[in-house]
Structures are given as C-alpha cells and as structure tokens.
Length: 106
Length: 321
Image 1 (cartoon, rainbow over the protein chains, first blue to last red):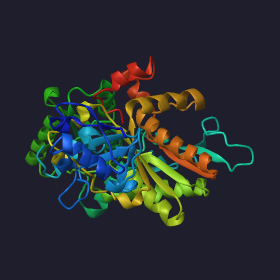
Image 2 (cartoon, chains in turn cyan, yellow; image 1 turned 90 degrees about the vertical axis):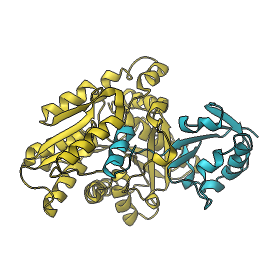
Image 3 (cartoon, helix red, strand yellow; image 1 turned 135 degrees about the vertical axis):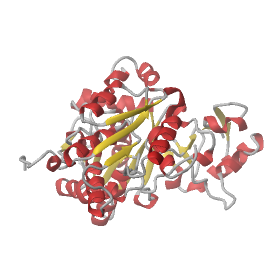
Image 4 (cartoon, rainbow over the protein chains, first blue to last red; image 1 turned 60 degrees about the vertical axis):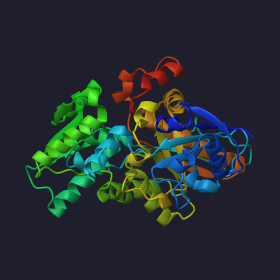
C-alpha cells in the first residue's frame, strides 16, 4: 500500500533531500514507523517520548489535520497523501513577531 | 441601523449573504445545503481585523495600559496594522509598525495614509531581521505598548461578543462555521459563542498552506502555536494549498460576484468540502464562512489573472493571507 508523504524543508536531512517519499501503514503511527526504517530518526522528530505528536508539528491526511481524526491512530488508505508541516501562525511574519514578543530567539 | 456617530461605531454589523450559485445542488426531495458569506470586508478599513483592533485598544484603555498620547508598536505589515492605524488615529495614539522593506507598496501606502509610522528592516534579513529590529526598538522604548494579538484575549472576545451573536441572529439554522486560522481569534471567539448556543455546530478551520520559503525554519522546536488557540473549540481543521485558494478566490468572483482576498478562497475551499459532505449524507446544512478581506490589496500579485500555475508561482514565497 503506497501513501505519499510530503516532507518539509527542515526534515529533508532525514530523506536525503527528497521532498516526497512513499510509505505504508494502516495508521499514521504505522506509517511513521515504516518511514523511520528507511529514514532513521524521522519518527523521533515528529513524535515525543510520551508518544504524542510534537506540539510544533502539524500532520495532514488529504489536507485534514490528524489531531481531529485520531492523531497517531488516524486510519490511512492506499492513495492517501500525508503532509507534514511545522506549526506557524498567521504567516511567517506574524509568527516571527509573536515569537519575538515571547522572547523566543529565532 | 445605518447611521453611526463615528467610524469606530460602524465596526461590525456586517452583511451575511447567501451564495445560491455556489451552493451545491441537492437531489429532489433532499434537505437544502446552503453557503453563506459573512462580509467582513465591509468593516471600516476593509477587513475582519477592525473588530480585534478596536477591542484590543479598548481593553488596553480600560486596564490603564494605554493612555492618551501613548505609542503602540506593532511588528506587522498585514491587516492588523491597517486596522490599528485607523483605530490609533481616531483614539489619539501614535502607531509605529516594523516591517521588512520588501513588503508590497499597497501596504506601505495604506499604513502611511492612515498615519502610521513605519520602520523598515533590511529585506535580506527577512522576518527574522524585522523581529530583531522590533525587539531592539521595544528595548529602547519600554513605554511603548505592544498589543500582541496572538495572545490578547480581547482579540477573541471581539468575536465572542460581536461576530458570533451577529451570525446566530442572522442564521439561527447555522450548522457549520468556517474561518481562516491565523491568530485564531476569529475561530476561538465566534466558535465558543456558537457552540454555547448550538451544541451540534461544526467549527471548521482553514489554514493557508504557503510556499516552502515561508516554512523555512531552522528547527521544529522554533514553531509557534498562538496562546489564544484552544483545539477543543474546533471540530475539524484543513490545510489549503495556494492553488486551491486561488481557484476558489476566482470562482467566488466569477460565479457570485464577490471579490475577495486569497485567504477567503482557502476558507471557501473548506466550506465547500463541508457542503458536499452534507449533500452526500443527505443532511441539511447552513454553512457560514468569513470573508476576511477584499481582493484590492492583492491585485499587484497578478494572481487574479493568467493560468492557475502562473498564479501559484506568483504567490510562491508570499504571505497571501
């Protein structure tokens, strides 16, 4: 079963620079484990030690946020597209401005 | 009511218009599925941000954080800056905006026209440089006030107290509310209000998915979720790419005569998905969505004409919402 996974720029060091990789799995968790077998370390960047999705990572199945579909237990089907994106709010500038006001270095 | 004592009093109370041509056709005998647009471009400066700007300034005045003659510092080139500039002018404050020098000339002209002062940061440094500049200015002027829309509860309260009640008054049969997700203020405030009154309502977020340049952060840990955001208010959340947003933006003006900004195209994309799901399930639906602003400020992108591929390329690396 092939699922297309879109990788953001900041995680392409794990995929040899590839923007899009393929994987398989009945759930998002299965898919991430499958990907990790070939792209070692990727799962650890997306899933916390407590076993939840990283707070600043958004994952979408066919453009819908998985946090509203069952998170790591989200069911996947052949032909689905999974998109991984870092969390940003209100565009990069707004995001950066907010980060500045919170005192977070960029 | 169509008479107001001042422009600030004319904030909100925007029309909700039906979209009979864009609403999906249902089979004979099936319950109706209708789309409704909340025209927030009809606010004083032409965007939904007028509501938040007015509430944030009033809240700061009431708490004593903002006194006559004070200076507001806002690192923004977007609608919030324009709204704040108008409110600051009418309430007697000075507004200083910090932005990269490569933002569109429309933005700069609008802000200056409304009386805002602009401090440019070098384009080469991008947002990071603008932020560094803003931090430096803030450190030099500790008396200047930052309203911080991402964590300012008055931003969401503006929608809890105005947008939400307006929608319920005009569309008591509402089944879905769809809006763009940025500071999250519109969705949190309106969503909370509507959920209290209509317990079965779906609150749906549409998030613009920008070109890769915008996500070029160095590290996942540098991401940001606004303080206002509470995922429990939402039912579903969609990421809408540039191509879909442009397609829907054009469809809205071609089919219904509504000329809107690209973020509204993204919102319509999610609203249509909800409408089509309802048709498939044979359920009645009244889907209301927010038109955050008109298309005027985005004409220079060139993305209203030409092929979709051209438009997508024109918007690559831009903050189109």
